Each structure stands twice: as structure tokens, then as C-alpha cells.
Image 1 (cartoon, one colour):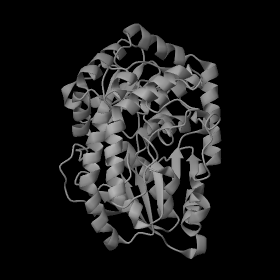
Image 2 (cartoon, helix red, strand yellow; image 1 turned 90 degrees about the horizontal axis):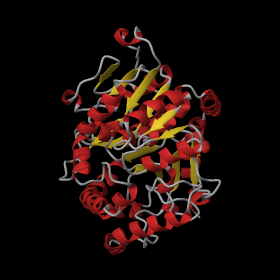
Image 3 (cartoon, one colour; image 1 turned 30 degrees about the horizontal axis):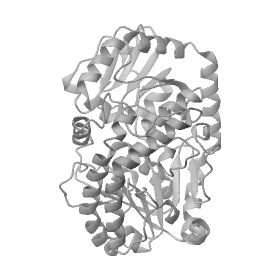
Image 4 (cartoon, one colour; image 1 turned 135 degrees about the horizontal axis):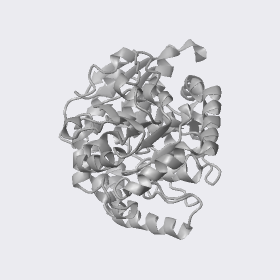
Length: 436
């Protein structure tokens, strides 16, 4: 540990599964290095993090759709507003102001509570995974690491790369990039101006145009294998540090393929559309009806609405399955392409069928296809023939299997996350080196 100083590190993640889990992956490394870690949690997460050695600080309830019951309420809210569903990324971009408005209201309720807690906690460092910055954070002068729990395009909107959440190819028509950017800017410009004016009114510096955070103020860490990154076309500043993943160890979890599935023939496939995808019961039923016609076996992450649909004889599933223990056992992964699942699947060297639902999942899915580690399909419009054919193609693609296995070997050998505590310690000691 640098200078033998124990750091008190406060984590403030978005309180939904993927964001909390990636924060836990970072926290585990800091705890192992001797640092003290606290998480701000709500009622749903209270009591769930202590097993990692994390101290919990319970937040007061606020009236917000982002105050979730394990993301189910938020998922239903997003589906109802058309932010998750069968519309195209461009159609959803036209509704981006709705999301910005919702998140701004949430943040304005949360920020005063955060401001009151800081003098009590007195952290040496804040690790933040949020969508937008807060005045109390900007004004606190406490060193901050921004943990980006989404794909890398969201960090900096650089015209040398596709716009985030577009799902457009890094090698595609750049006129489509500009069209998408303009749609988002037109949809959000009034909300952005109001948010920026409010930040400035609180005494903060103006934000970069159309941005709802200022990455130059922080050490920025993000997780994605370099094989899926965009730094070849859009290099990042020295205050951005990439890791191959933020994978949790979860040493207490075990999993074995249930006997009723283990005894059946066929390859083994893991199917998970995350909490948002699983909450769209109608689409889950449609996709499971297709998979029921496959000769292969499926482990299904069913989500909190698991009682509203049933599985076929070639399937086994539960509300929640220990994904980190399942992935090494399967031959193929069908995923919504959330960044954690993508990184964990690459860690274990499995090809993917990526079926994005919203946000960075579109970008992650396109990169998976463009770089030859899987296939992108439309979660809402793919036909029975498309999905079943994609499964057979990927299961029999030996070249793809070796390509993803090679990446897996590199990731596990490099163990990039082991370097994280030293980087964090150096940032606290030498902050100017990173942000000036």
C-alpha cells in the first residue's frame, strides 16, 4: 500500500444490478489491499454487501423511479415509456430527453442528501458510477474516480467514433453517426441547458457542451477488453484507465448443471437478457418458445417476474443464477450485451449472440459482431429461423471459438484488475498528474 495510508473510499453506484456488481468488483480489490470501503445503499441493497467486507450507509427514501426494487420497477417504467422495447436506437434517441429529465429529477432529490452525508463520512476518495454529475461532488474538493459502468462510447462524445447508444458500426457510414448525434442534441438541448444553468447556479464550472458530466475533473476507469475498445480510432486522455473487466470473485458461490439438464443431449447455452429484458414478459415468452425448438439445452436467468412464464423441457432456470459460475460451463451465451456480461463472457472465452435492448447494449453488440466474437440479433424482431440458425452457426464456428479463447487467455494472464489499487493510491497521492 502506497505510504501505508489506509484510504476511506466511498462508493456511490447507480443502485441497479450491473452498476452495483462492477463497483463490488473494484471494492474487493481495494479491501484486499487494506482499504476501508463504504457503499451508499437503499432498502433493497441493505444487508447484501456486508459479506464482501463493505460497510453500508443507508440512504433515506426518495420519490424517484430510479429508487428501484431490484431494477424491476425501473424496468417496467422504461418499457412503458418506450425506452426499452422494439423501437430502433434512433427512435429511442428522439425520447432521450425523457430519460435526462427523469434522471435530473432523481439527482436533484439525491444531491442534498449526499451533501449532508459527506461531512459525517469524511471519505478520502469517492468512487462514482452515475449518469450525471452532482454539484455537491463538484464542490467538495474530494478526489473522485468515475467508474463508467457502461460501454466506453458514453465517456467522451468524439466525432472520430460512433455516437454512444447508436449501435452504429465503427467502420460504418459516418453520415449516419452525424445524423444520430444531431437527433440526440436536438432532443436534449433544452434539458441540457437547464441542467448546466442549475449547476452553474450552484457555483460549479460550466459543463462541456451537451455533456452531463465533466470527465476532465476525475480519474476515469472503465472495463472492457481492448479487443472491443475504440482507442485505435479515438484515443483517450491520460486520466482514463482501461481494465479488461470489473469482475467480482464471488468465492462463496457454487453451481452445478442440474441433473435433469445434465442428462439431456446437446450443447449448453446460457440465456440472460438482464433484469430489464426479463421484465418484458411477452418478449421473453416469444424467445423461449423459439429456443424450445432447439436441440440444445438452456440455462435461463428468469428475473423477478419468473412466475409469469414457464420453461420448456430443454431448459432450466431460476429468478437469479450465479452467472460467474455458469459461464465457464456453457458453450454459448445469448445476452442483452450489458457491459458486465460482455466482459465476463470474454473472460471465460465464450462466443455470444448479442440481443441489445437499450443504451450501450447496442454499441457493445455491434462491436461484438464487428470484431468477430459473436453475432448481433434484434431481440424483438429476430425470426425463429434467424435465432436457431445463429445458435448452430456459432456453436460450429471453430475459428471464432479459438479467437475468443485466445482473448480469454490474455485477459486471465494479464489480470489487469490487480493493478487497480496501486493506480487508485497513486491518484490520491498525485492527483494533479491525472487531471491537469
